[in-house]
Length: 66
Image (cartoon, rainbow, N blue to C red; front, side, top):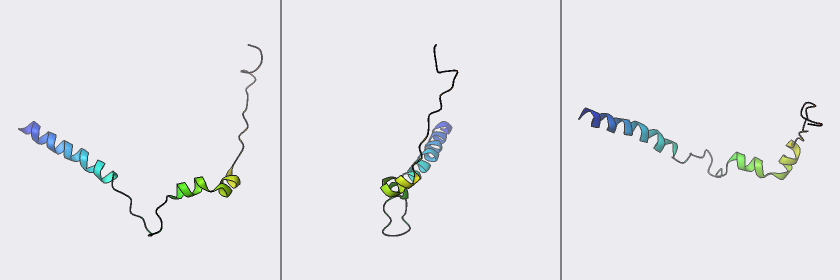
């Protein structure tokens, strides 16, 4: 009987955080349905401003004859 009680308590402790994390986030303003991440990652002008070119550095130890 004790192990059944522990199993029920354990499952309850596992289910509650999962259900709480699955709840839909509450929007602060009525018109704010889209995420700011989506807005930033789809704005072409902002992407052009923030783009950086990363040059690939080759080590002399790995280049050349081998």
